[in-house]
Image (cartoon, rainbow, N blue to C red; front, side, top):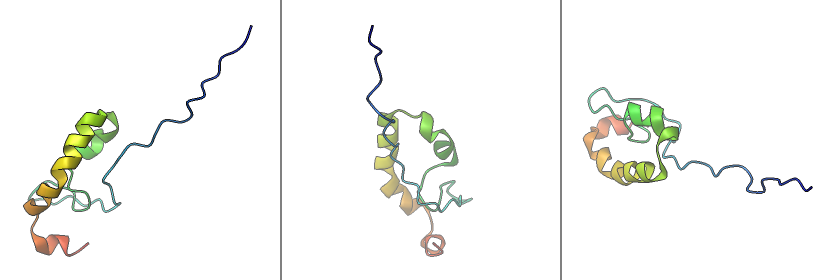
Length: 74
């Protein structure tokens, strides 16, 4: 009797926009580093790939919700 071994290896890393600047803007509610909402950051690993992709696609537009002088700090 042969024993089957899983050869798939470790799971692929999850895509993330995190740049390790974790400061939430009180006005917009967005992280100044990645432009995600706090709830999105907290639930990121539980989202499906499609959910993460939808959020990632929205991030460039979210930057405009933060006053430029705040972004200049980072």
